[in-house]
Image (cartoon, each protein chain N blue to C red):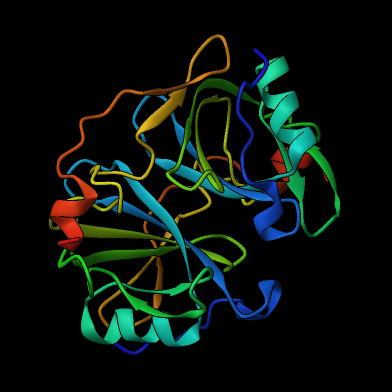
Length: 128
Length: 128
């Protein structure tokens, strides 16, 4: 699948924002970033790729944990600088072992509360 | 509600990424950015505030369209640089008059396809 349009990579230093949601229930799994290569590889291979801002490199999701993301649908926003990726996620999306990176909510007192189940420990995921 | 934790505003020039979802059905409405003031005002007032990167100013959602967002829940990601805001949205979230800014999908040929209903025209929203 070759894109016939181009997202606006120029707006934010070559990156667009990607919200990845679980294709089965719509839950937001993670927020990450794509450069042009990650975007193209995601469409070409059907496996979700990102650009890691912290490691400054192309990042095929699941390359170290094995928990890959299969592209189901790609949606684009009004000004073409963000995408929603609907994906089939195998295992936890979060490196902390939760299904979603958003496993904490802010309670009425403004404190962080974990209200999701940890599926694996990071040690189990990365074999450390 | 005063936050007892602080998101990591330093990572990306003072901004965190905010994914706003409809509290009734979980649909992703928009992706925007918050600086520290927008984050604080969102928690204090219960009305969702952003930082507009294009206009370079604080942006209370709905200030010109009237389509405000009422905060229902705030979730924080593992590395504290992104939030998911669950909000009650009145009217379209998108300035193009759609419920969600993500009203287009990429089809098998890589073309953009509008597959959502336009609720209002921009002229109806902004009275131009």
